[in-house]
Length: 141
Image 1 (cartoon, rainbow, N blue to C red):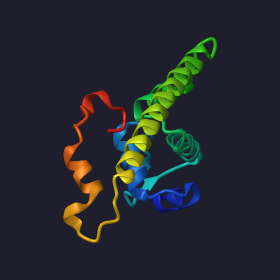
Image 2: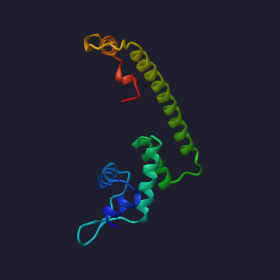
Image 3: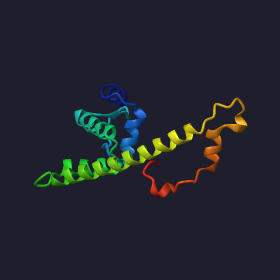
Image 4: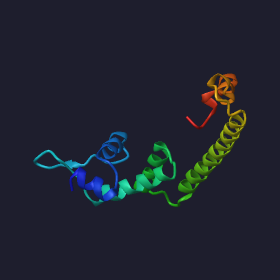
């Protein structure tokens, strides 16, 4: 099948398919005599796997590790379980950060005095006065 057909059956864009190829997550397909990329069922299954992992907020490195384990399976699945356990810890950290973010936003919103004059807007003043967070310590990059 051509890239457009693969995109249609997997419900993603051709740009996404090319991007995953560029990252090495999706193998480069063979080319036909007309130089079109020719995809097969293996590409479809792998692309669905990648998209499902992305829907679980897994990073490209995590997906790459899972694909390597799938391609050359070890004796047991402890490495897969460990990777998922690490991902769950990361999700827990992000949840904590999102709760902190919501608290900050609620605090800012409480500063609103419903003034008609933008110069007296409590939210804008609060944003000016807030301390900047160090992005390197945040997982919400």
